[in-house]
Length: 179
Image (tube, rainbow, N blue to C red):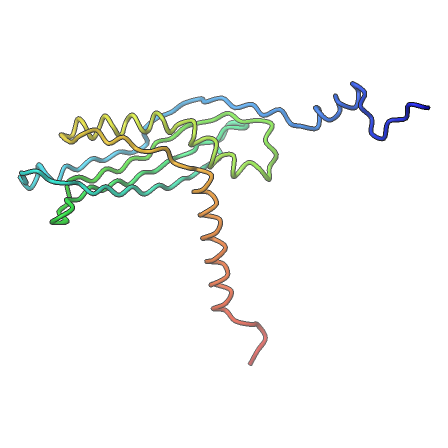
């Protein structure tokens, strides 16, 4: 009986497989509020009483390359509106753009876009959540504790929306070359 393995399982072969996996490094260089606005409509209009709020949260993401090698700015934009359930009167409007600057290396170019819009916001979200909670509390409302955002699903939804928009645009143009 001879020992002839079908696939190499030597340490050298295993080392080559490990070398093929890029080593991803990520460092948060900075986090900051780019823009913020909190409008307390309840106080402005002098509304009183026991109001049941209905809160709506819209999330948008943006990523930009910075001048330094391997640095990217990732911005999470929240638009939060709170209205009284019964009357529909606005209680507050909160808009915030929270940015993180990341030093990233080792991510293949084809994976960089999803990495920036999924992984980076996951890192900054707990800080953004805390700011939202503090500002709503300081604005005279119960603290708004945002639920965890599924950035992967948000990314997939945006890709699907873009694909549908592209299909609709090509359908409107119709076949070219017809008279």
